[in-house]
Image 1 (cartoon, rainbow, N blue to C red):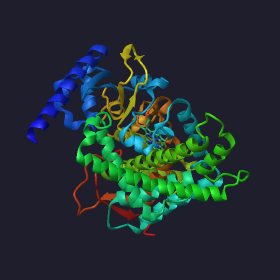
Image 2 (cartoon, helix red, strand yellow; image 1 turned 90 degrees about the vertical axis):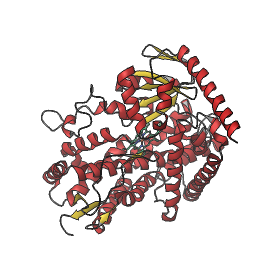
Image 3 (spheres, rainbow, N blue to C red; image 1 turned 180 degrees about the vertical axis):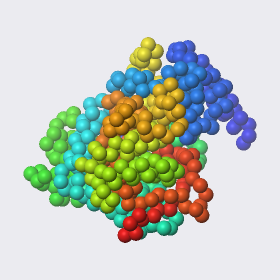
Image 4 (cartoon, helix red, strand yellow; image 1 turned 120 degrees about the vertical axis):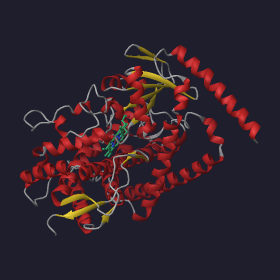
Length: 493
Ligand code: HEM
């Protein structure tokens, strides 16, 4: 057994070594050596990956390259270089294969499709989120407002005892995104399935830096078992979606007002399902299933991990928490509900949220692949190169941000303290045409939740539990560490 394994390892190492030299000669960017990458192999695909890339960028520059198993990665480390990288349609697409391929149904949905199809699907989602989001029609904004109220009243029930926020926030926040897409909540008994999918998808994404690009791993037994379970979880989620589609089809009436993204999509399928459209027939249905999945996964996990991290920061920084509370009380009083109309009077709260989003970056690195040979800022990038936007790294550069590891909400306020500045430098939502389409929804969701939570409750460390740190974990996206909070209802309601 030992000898074939040694031969396999030697063959792989030789193959990787030859490709490494080939890559270096056709893409003349500076970057760490074969040995340096090998010595840091264990950090790739973990929370340490963006930190490692930030360290390397100090040594090798704003754009540098490295190779793993013969695959070439070019890393972009500043807002300017990230934007330049994302400026062309030929450098916008996510790498296919592996976990992505299963969940995008092949090449469908927003993250799976390319060019025209991607643009059509994206446009419809953007329009629907505007219509059915927090600032959308009366019915949608009211329902989402009630979801926020429900989170506050649920938290009130959890006061004065040890509270694991992750468990409390996941489901209600996922449900807000479900509401925008299918105007109902996720069946509660299906929640564990969604969580399982996220864990497996996260694990595969983490290792995808190696795995989706290195099919050699696919024949390892543990990988096969893992893939089988992952596929089962995707199928389970798809069944829920299909049920929702059937329900919508039953009551779908073209003349009536749409209630959600799904209604909009079905109307589009009927009206514009012409040849070549991404909404046409079976293609349209595959795109629908994948796009629903995209929005629900990309929208809920990022948002609740970010909210949890913000709450953790507020718990660890009582002065900042008090200042947010003071601002909310001046804007709406001690117990008036905070609505979106009030948020223009909450610049400090908004600056805090922006600072914590900068520090966190739920998706710390984003990987795309170049479809054609091209040039970025004078550097030749051959087709097939993996392009890494180091979003977290860009947010922590000391030449762009004063004391980047210190929490300073004020950096986002002008001298009057009333207006936000510098927000365009924050890369946490990506850049270019593929920038996060949920940015406006995420901002509304976070400011509504944070301002209402801080107004009503005091968030404290639990005295009987170990003090929380800011050491993040990697799940599907970056995630706050586990921590236990003590929530005190300020009004004892
Ligand atoms: C704090 C919360 C959020 C963060 C930090 C975040 C971050 C990101 C990032 C970094 C990307 C990749 C951008 C790129 O490729 O350059 C992305 C894409 C995406 N996000 Fe978000 N996101 C958040 C919330 C949301 C929400 C609430 C939704 C939907 C309701 C959403 C839906 C999407 C979708 C569908 C994509 C893929 C866009 C495309 O490929 O064209 N995100 N997000």
